[in-house]
Amino acid sequence: MNSGYSILPIATRIFKLGENIFDFIYEYIEPLENDVIVITSKIVSLAENRTIPLDEVDKTSLVQKESDIYIGEMGYGCHLTVKHGLLIPSAGIDESNADGSHYILFPEDPFKSAEEIWKAIKQRWSLENLGIIISDSHTSPLRRGVTGIALSHWGMRGVKNMIGKQDLFGRQLKMTQINVADALATAAVFAMGEANEGIPLAIVRGSDVEFVANTDKNECKIPIEEDLYAPLLKFQ
Image 1: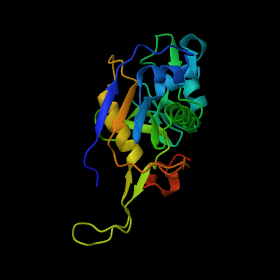
Image 2: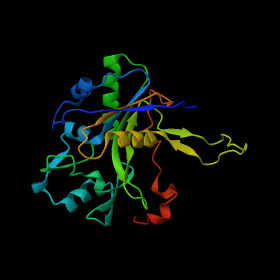
Image 3: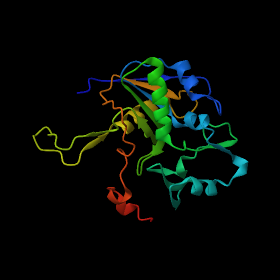
Image 4: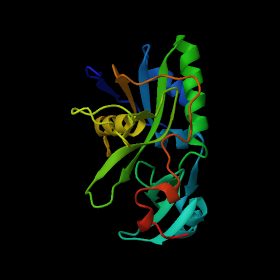
């Protein structure tokens, strides 16, 4: 049983386009064994030069190009899309927390990025157990505001399977699984903020996540045809 964990938000200077993300993390973080480091996807994208000048592209065309599945226009000038297995507005393309002249795109391969950061940090500090989460914000249908989500994770099990466990009355759970990666991302993103806080990094310390050497990239994802809300997603 988890006896409680803490979120340590880490304020930094502004991360620059094309900057080395490893040096940046080393500058601010000294991880301990069993830590989970949460990194906002924006600085990963900036490190990988995943930006496009606003004056070089029409945003609608860019969204359609970046989407894995483009569903269509929605409210507030956004577009409903699927990107990296997430149902998310505008393929995750962001104009906030940029310099006002660029669109910031999602990392090309978020799990590869998380793995590379995981390997570098483990080696530098000789750690056995370490988790990495690359986070973003998203909206939920019929809920006001945004919460955090794990765009990718590495070094930890992202889903805790409770099927077969017993509830308080001894009945077996038949469907329950806990999305650990998204839960920790939500807690960390709340501590990191959404505006001018300047906190792109956070450490989750004292959690009872299961650390693994081989991460399953698809464990948090559900194929559309198997999703509980599939009847609402008749767009193919």
